[in-house]
Image (cartoon, rainbow, N blue to C red; front, top):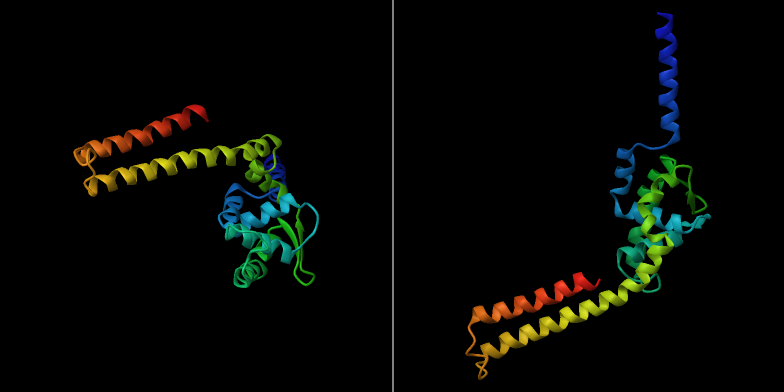
Amino acid sequence: MSATTQTLPETSELQGEEKTEGLSKDKIFHILQTQRRRYALRYLKEHRDEVKMRDLAEQVAAWENDTTVQALASKERQRVYIALYQSHLPKLDEEGIINYNQSRGSVERGPLAEQFDPYFETTDTTTDETANSESPIDDDRWFSYYRWATVMSAGLFGAAWLNFPGISAISTYSLAAIVISLFAFISSAQFTFQ
């Protein structure tokens, strides 16, 4: 019996240590299920020192509205600020993920914030920055190809509808096959060359 008695405290001590060491995956995923919390944690990962809550809220609002901080409307700022102030930041502070001083309006990473870093790795690594800097150019190029294919397809169907000579003689099925082939060609080229 004494061996069993000695084993139980050791097990409970280990469980206690696990709880203080970090959050469970379920808790991490629960925290990350809200976009505003993800944005807030991402911002704090990028700014490791203490930040003003106002700056954090403005950047989160800009990301949510796919714009810049300077272009934000007052309502967009206010809506995000209030939600962070009343709900999201206190929740993250309560879990030990951030240190949130509501009266001073300051926020900084807490002891458990590093557990969330792997979920934001794509924004921090040098190779990803290089890939991301080249990616918009490639995306714009392929977007341009798709845009022109769409214009040409619409023009082709428009010409058939208006009974242009030569084009009106082509059946609708043949026109559809031409359009599908055009997009298939561009898609396969993008897959091959990207």
